[in-house]
Amino acid sequence: MKNRIYILVIIFFISVALGPTDVSAHRSGCHRWHSCPSDSGSYSCGDAGHPCSYPTYPASGGVVYPPSGQYKDCYDCAWKSVSTSDSRAWKNPMQKGSRGVDVINLQKVLNKEGVYPEAIYSGSYGILTELAVKKFQTKYNIVSEGSPSTTGYGRAGWATIAKLNALYTSASF
Image (cartoon, rainbow, N blue to C red; front, side, top):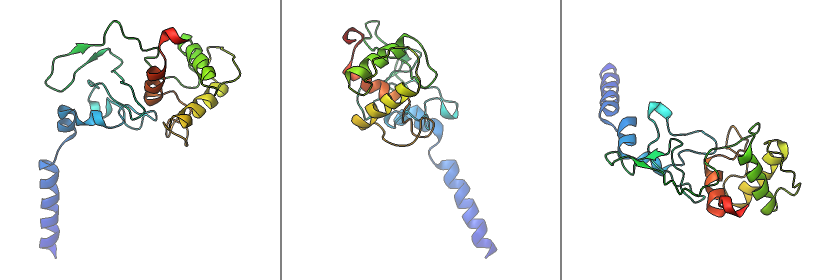
């Protein structure tokens, strides 16, 4: 019986030692096909100490580039810069408490979508904006339940931003 336990322990350690590592997954770029970065933040680039270097392609559409504006198409590829003619209206996630022009533009677009009928463009991401984002997310099958901290429901995270950018440019508000 003891020999079986020792053999199982040895097999376990060998499989861990020889199995794929976080580094190899990031090196190959395979993590970029997951929902990285996700609206919920449950898996975002930078986990395990590896900075995000790849654009991501959320299921909701569009492309999300790393916030640094620098990216690679593969681990061994040369660094590229996001085009200066970048027409994305939103480049960063927003959530309850966010303020500024990006929130005003979000509120305008949510009004055009018919999910923010208040037409109050305060620039403050409060409860009305959060409710409108939830309606938008449900409408486009991004997420339809949970909370901003668990699933991203109500938070304008990366998948929601990608969909907004796919639908609207800064010239369309």
